[in-house]
Length: 288
Image 1 (cartoon, helix red, strand yellow):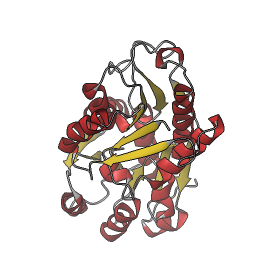
Image 2: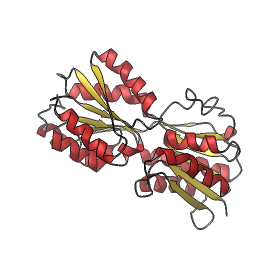
Image 3: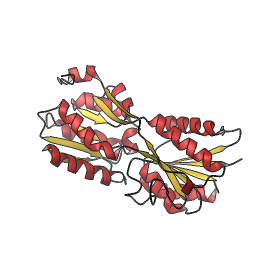
Image 4: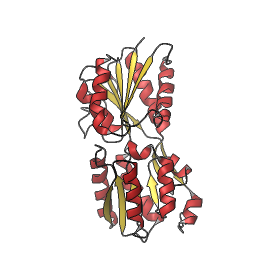
C-alpha cells in the first residue's frame, strides 16, 4: 500500500477540511485511505521551526509522496528530499519563489496547486478600503516566523502606495500575540486590518472574528469561514476546491505519473463573503 505524507505548519484538527478535500481528489483517481493508500500526518502545531524535523521524519519513513501544505510546509519538504515526489498547495507564485522552473513544466520532483492568495492581497486591501473609505492607515497582521509574510507584505506595500494609505505591520507568532495585536490596533479608531494567510491565522477564523468584534476592528480574511463566524469580509480561494486538486495530482503520481509531467494547477475558484450584520454593527455601508 503506498503511503502519502501530509506535512503542515498547523494541526490535525485545523487541517481537517484540507485533508477531507485531498481525500476527495484521491478518490477521483481511485485511491481510498485505508483501502489502497495510507496517509501519515505531520503537523507543526504552528511552530515553524519544527517543520524540518517533521519533513525529515517523513523521508525516513520512506513515504511515496509528500503533500506540502502552504509555502512553509513546502519549503521544509523541498529541503528534506529531492527524490520523493512533492505535491504542494502554496499561496505564493511557485515560479517566482523558485519552487518550480515553470507552471507547465515544473522540473525536478515537485508540482502542485497555486492558490491565489498573495496574488489577491491588493484586491483585499482595495475591498477593505471601499468598506472603510475614511481610513488613511491599513494594518497587516502577520507571523514574523512564517515564510509567507515577506511576499504578502511586498504585495500590500505596493497596494498601499497605489491606494494612498500607510501600511502598518502587526506581528503575532502565537495566539497571545494575536490578542495583543488587536488590542494595540483598537487604540487607533477606524484602522482596518488585512490578515495574512499563514496557518496561524487561517486556522483560527472564530478566534479572529471574536477579537475583531470585541475591538470593533474592520477585518478582511482570506477564507469565508471568517465571515461566517462573524468577521466583516473575506476574499480568497475556495480551499476545498484547491485541496481536491492537490489530492487528484497526488493520485496521478501514485499511479505512475512524474511530477515534471504534471503542470502546476491554478485554484481559480475565488469566493467573496460579507457579513452584513457585522457591517451594520461597525457602522459601515458595504452595499452602496
